[in-house]
Length: 280
Image 1: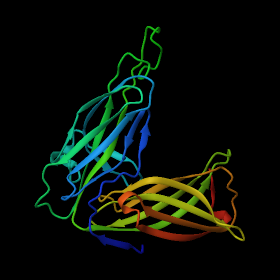
Image 2: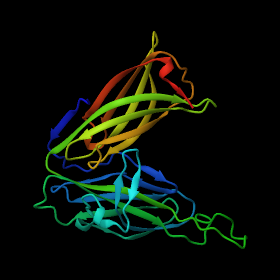
Image 3: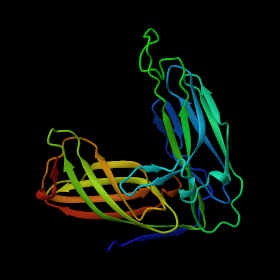
Image 4: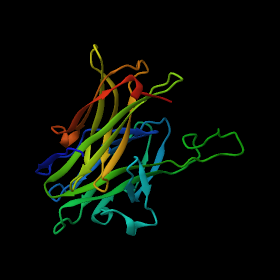
């Protein structure tokens, strides 16, 4: 039976400016948008890190989170979307062209949010690369007669949280697996979630072999556990390949980032024997 830690605090009114991520040659900052009835505007910054001009079209995408991680696309099945926010938020511009090194702001505006019941509403803002004749999107050079256009799509979540922040999450289990070929292994964690709202934070796993010192073993940044999920399985990548199987303790911490940075969602220590460590 999971032991939940509950968080019920006033929903924040500040702008999240914590994390950014480079999707191929497109830099997006931040990687999650949180709106509230009091915070109705938001600005995303995008940048082109390539050495050629790139164009992106922006549109909404509806997705449902999966308990094993990742998303299921609901495009064409919008009626199945989980509390979509796309009809309530406007954004501009809808198309951006960025020269090498250039940045541009995308502005979002929440049009209406009064009268909504407490909970969370979410859609995903999609950035679709527009193919052109440059090598940025061609699989082969200009001199080759047959060209392959690769259309790249990236999406970030846009969430509207209504009501005081209400999230409860517990680390149910954690296990270690290493690769027999010497490659970096993984720490697999499983979470149980309750409450009206999602969580957002970094997961870190620390290993303390019997008689040794504790070290950071694996981590995963910017992990969302969305409100439609009861459970989530998340793999953490080992920070190096020098792990030696032994008896010891595995301490897992899930702590908030951005406006949630003062929250430790959960922390749990697991006793691991050498025989428990999988070799794949």
